[in-house]
Length: 132
Image (cartoon, rainbow, N blue to C red; front, side, top):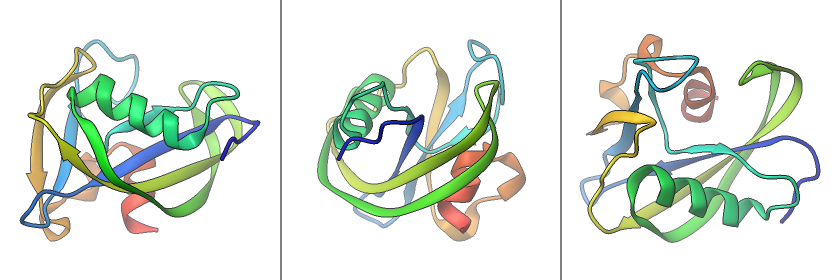
């Protein structure tokens, strides 16, 4: 599926114990430095959404996706990376193949149960993906 406007893709990646993968935004980011987020980002214009989330996961974790499935589509009103507007957030579920090695966009990673997550430490799109 290709979405023709700005699309944001995120993935709820679970390990074998059902815990969710979170990445901590590094100082190399302009916004939400130190916040935790799900793997994901912006789909390129004309890029298939499935390809976008696979690319983002590979770039951010050095891992490949397994069992990718679109779980929900949510509207976002406001700004994304400084761009104001109305956007759609495409939330996928996935498993990973490989060992997580975070990119320079992130400083660390953790697997946590949803009940262990403090929402105030999450980037806004990840908070919406998990709790909407």
